Length: 304
Ligand SMILES: Cc1cc2nc3c(=O)[nH]c(=O)nc-3n(C[C@H](O)[C@H](O)[C@H](O)COP(=O)(O)OP(=O)(O)OC[C@H]3O[C@@H](n4cnc5c(N)ncnc54)[C@H](O)[C@@H]3O)c2cc1C
Image 1 (cartoon, rainbow, N blue to C red):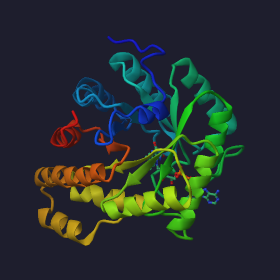
Image 2: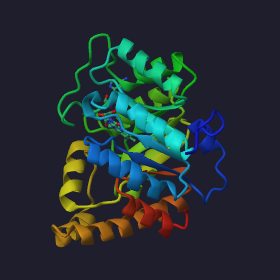
Image 3: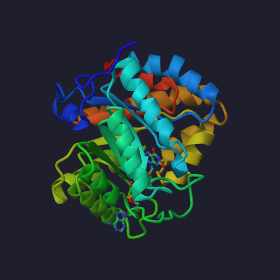
Image 4: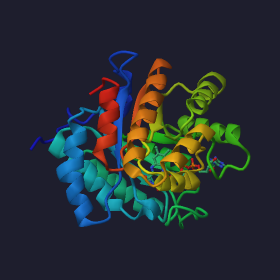
């Protein structure tokens, strides 16, 4: 067992700042907290060891919709840091949490030497519907960013939406203005929502950097498609667009998840190759707790 000490746990903003070269993006891998003990076992004994062999720069662990995995998120982050000696980040949301509740999570994080937090408003229970602010809680994630910064020496990430956030009826440019506000409140870096057309990310990055003057790292989120049914559900929930040619290809693959997974690896590899040519600072891989696709993509890119 590798025990994390204060040296092996790094601030993610330093990881981005210390990137070795422009063609070597920072690799981060996202996991979700399993809901069953079988899921825990697969994550710990098979998925995590396989993905950590790729030597990612850091990992991140989601906070279940509706705040359903509060303490579990911290314990998985702690386990990754201790057992694998790798920096890990806890996601934290405002859902059903008062300031006191959030303060208690931050205290626990400090005790566990968790130094990186992704500050989110969060998905409501069930993953869709209206967000409802908790009593004495936060309405928007910029308030959470500010609160975390005021309550500890944490490095804080925030979410960005290359196509605009689904609930922002005023359009993507207004949503991107809110992102600038989150950075002004102290966010140290941005991780984006999944997208399938790199032009969406590049336009977003251009606008945020050149027009709004944001200088923190902006890292694209990449999701390897595993099944047509699953990706339709995800994109409906988060509002990401499936380009016409991709939709046609997925339709032709139908319910054949094996063929769809193979195609998903090919598609995400091409997406990442182009993003690397465009000088992205990192690639944040949504692993969906499956090792195969992420391993294949990172190997295809020659980054393992
Ligand atoms: C990388 C990544 C990881 C994620 N991990 C999780 C997770 O672990 N758990 C989970 O539940 N969800 C997760 N999500 C989903 C996220 O919680 C949802 O997309 C949520 O709906 C928005 O979160 P946010 O932090 O961007 O919210 P906010 O920044 O609060 O934005 C929410 C809405 O309010 C608007 N808004 C923002 N600021 C203002 C303002 N000042 N005034 C008026 N309107 C404003 C925005 O345009 C947007 O429509 C993740 C998303 C990403 C991209």
